[in-house]
Structures are given as C-alpha cells and as structure tokens.
Image (cartoon, rainbow, N blue to C red):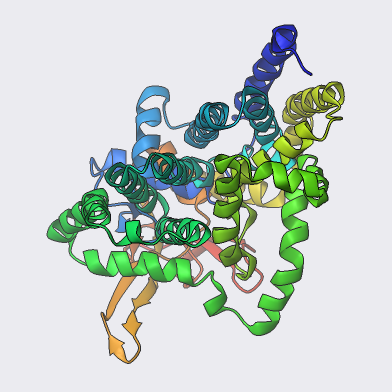
Length: 488
C-alpha cells in the first residue's frame, strides 16, 4: 500500500501548485457570466452604506439574498474592488469544503480515502478549468453551506443527537437560503427523507427536537426578511420571488421534450464534467465493491445524499453544471474507496495525473486565459461600451433609461392566491457595464424612467437627442449611447 511519509514532497508540490493555479490567474480575465452582478451588488452595498438591501443601479435586487455579498464586501474592504477580488470567496469556499470533507472522511472511513477524495475533488476537470475560473459566481461558495448542512445531518444521526442534528443542519439551511434561496430547503427535506426511508426510522422526524431545532435554525431567515420588510416593504414578495425564481428552472416549468432530452443528456454531461475521476465509476459494477461500501455508514450516506437529491436536477432542463457542485465530494468519495479496495489502485499513475492536472491549470492561466481575454467578443464589446461612455460623458451626468423590467409575483396554492405584487428592476444591461462605470466614476449609475436634459444615456428602449454610438449587444436589440439636449 501507499506510505504517506514518502509522499510528503509530492503532496506539498500538489498543494503549492494548486494554490498558484487557483489564485495566480484571478486577475487575468474580465468578469463574466454572473460574476459582475455579484461585484456590482457588493459595490453598491458599500457605497450606499446599506448592507440590508441588495441593489442594482440603486434599485432593489430580489433574485438572490445577501450573504455572498456580505462576505465579498469584507474582501473589498481589505483588497479593494478589483475584478480578481470578486473571485476570492468561492475559491475559499471550495478549499473550505475540501478541508471539512477530508476531516470527516478521515474520521469515518480512513486516511487514504480522505486524502485521495480530497485530491480528486480539487483536480476534477470541471472544478479545475471552469468552476474556479469563473469563481466570482456564488455556487462554489454556496456548496460549502450545503456540504456542512448534509454532514451535520449524518454526524449527529450517527450519534442519535437529534436536537444538535436539527439545530445545526437548519442553521446551515438558513445560511444557504440567505446565499442562494430555495435549493437549501430541498436539500434538507430530501436528505432527511432519504435517511429515514433507508433506515426505516421515521419517529425522529416527528420529534420535539425537530420542531425546536428547525424553528431556531431558520430564525436568521425570518429575522432578515422581517427587518427588510420593516425598512423597505415587500419583504414577503422578496421571499416568494426567491421561491419562484428557483422553480422557473425546474421540471414544472419545462416542456416534456425538454425534460426527456435532459434525462438522456444529464448523466453523460455530469460524467464529462468530473473527468478523469468519474471513470472510477467502473468499479461500482464490481459486486465486491458495492458490498464494501455498505460496511461504512459514511459512504452509504454519500450515496444516499447523491441519490436523494440529484433527481431534481436530472429532470430539470434549466439545471446548470454549477448547481451540482455540492454533489462532488459525495460522488467522488465512494468511487475512491472502491478504487483503493480493488487491489490495483495504480497510485503512481494517479499521482502523475493529479500533478499533470494542477500544472496544466497553471499553464492554462498564462496561455489560454490571456488569449480568451483578447479574443472573446463579449469581453471586448463590454469594455468598449464602458470606455466610450466614460470618454463621451467626461464627468457629466450619465444614466440608463427608460422602461423598467418588472417581476410579477403571484404565488398560489391551488386556487388560493397567496400574494400579488410587482417588483421593479432597471432595464437589463450586461452587468459588466454598470459595474465598471460605477467603479471608475465612484458613483451609482442611476436609472431614469423620464429622460433628463443634458444627460448621457445608455438604453435599448429609446434613442433621443444626439446619437453617439450603437452596439449590437443582443440579436434582437441594439444598445444606444446618446445625449439629450439642453432645454431652450
């Protein structure tokens, strides 16, 4: 077997090169996807001294709660508001999840399985070359809360400490909900039901400890939205919008053909995302391997968690790979254990592969990423729009206009309507643009419903006054930069 004292050097090399790979390339590419939105909201929280109400261009933002932005605000305060800082919290979230997973796997299984599952988790293809490249998105950060939520359920279930189980897991649910919303509720319910069904134990779910732990655990959610409602109103609409926003990505909002397509495409895509380590799934087809898994309650729980929760994403065409990060440690660990127990683990080959992958990430940082920065059309277009707007306005008033986006919140139970409300947002603009403009001018880029005189505007709705530039931002819309005149 493998002797870890002899492995100290290559392990140090692995983790050193991994850290260089993860942190060394954070500054190279502009923010993409959801990253600039996270930076924009956090920037506005700081500059408006308002950490209770997430906003975009000064208008309330209702699609995500604020915890990620609170954490990011701490890093902005320490390092400033550069693009690379937006990416730090999720990188630390991944490393935190890996550290906790190592500790619990070592305790409940063995050191070998703990170490190799950590190495494979951190060197998986999707994690290494996509998730940690666009780490300004909140999903890796969120995965840490889901992992702790699940692991507390398992840990205290083993000890039959029901109050601790419900209190800690519901507290993690609260932190997860205040980061991303509805998915944390689904993870809690399905995991508890999965354990109860597997072990044929139901009484603990209906205990006073569940009621008390649940009430205390979700108190942060109730407290946040109650305070929000007291200051700004529409707190209940905010909550229901979070629930509806998540449900819009589910199977209930999809056509049958889309669901059927997802059923076939999802497994192959998931296995591709976690290459090369998803190839270890081949060991699952060995009867001896499946029997060995049953000897360890922790490994059984890994499979339970995976099976109990993955089906929601399997049948939901709107599910994206980043939604599945919480599953990664639970997917990889049983495979690692079966591989090690198979009698021919080929450890030297595995060492070579993990080192090759992390060195590959460093090379990727300084070859592929600079090329993408130079050649990706969206990156260049958004930079050009920002530079044009800043140059044209020369410190004068600049805003966006003119038709607000709206969200109609209308939750119901059967024929009973629970709430009817409308939430308003500024006209959609790629979030890089307001973030970069606001950061450069150190002031909010406001949204005007009514045009103001002698003001520079960016808008897809209206072109009034002096047209300066136009940009094909979308296939069906053009973004205009124009200036309104001075009244006579």
